[in-house]
Length: 468
Image 1 (tube, rainbow, N blue to C red):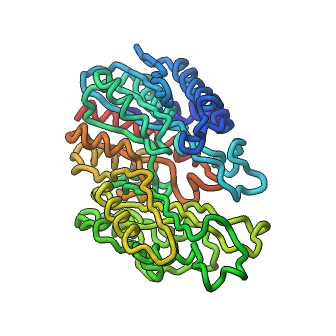
Image 2: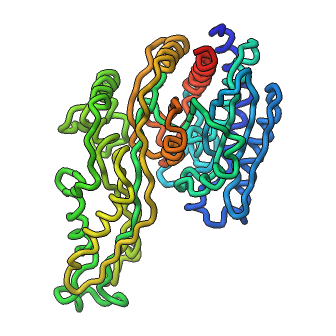
Image 3: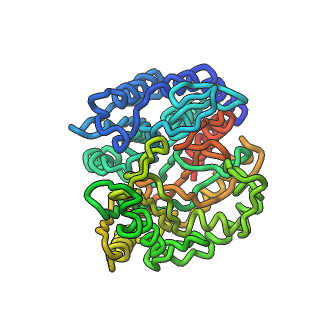
């Protein structure tokens, strides 16, 4: 592959076609089903997938077939089949559903309004993960433009990832014969430690979510009359949370949520920390000045990728401040989100947490913990020599620096599914979600230059896969 020609082709297509298309895609509020139960009636998901389908059909890829596959009541899947010069299969994966708006966007930004500033395209879903369709097809086109052979490529773009991919297994079963048995999986939905080199994700944490509710009354009463007689429902929840999390250190307590960290992952975390330095924690929008965590940067990376954590992501039963009268609240509910180590058994972890929270209910209260979802994590198989060499070659060619390896604190349910179904496959899990890109939060952006370089890197890996 002529690297200069590849870069020139990819850059031009991004500038003239991909950026305008992603900008239009950002305007569509196609929130994932968990956040828009009436998604089918609203039509945003259909509009988004039709946009991706229409663009894909304009790409002059040899013998390509583009289809939106639909199952009743389930989010559509974009399925693209591109024959190659061999029967070996490469599966390229992404998703087109989005997280909700969230609050706190800068005054000149909006989740559904594309804005380009300082080489970044702002708006919900551009980097997570709207660019995946464009990047995948452009990488394949870059090879075909130079007459370079590649394997049979299958592109699968789902519409339910942000809700845990509960629709996807049904499509995997339906499309099993058409997908075949991929020996390389390329996923463009992950993080990058910086915007200066190619990053390969080595692991993904699992996720356990649940709803913890404490009731003390059937209706609210005057707090002056009830205080000292009726316990606070919020205090009950505080007490219960202390059973599963040390409030001083943040350490998650149940043994069932911990695993032994492989030595290779510890070593990779040290190398990544050496490269990233203090950006491991400085990339976040801290409320305090000059934050200085007590742990080393490599330990922070391991905390984020191989140790369980608990986040409270929602609450009910708490009035807004403007409505907070002198009332003893009848109940409080918290949404608990546990991030689980990659090799942790998510169902076993859920059972352990439920047993702990349901046991020995505090006096004068009713307590219920309901498990909402469990998602397994994923730990990459040993990397093949050809893939390790190819990723490094690609990173040097298009970034000017060697490739790097790092675990990711988030979850991509499809990787766990694929790992079980295709245990011999190799994985290139990478993405554009670097420092301050803030997927799921305010001011999400796509780093345009990294998008171009990453696309070229994927082309290099596809060439090396064919020639290995």
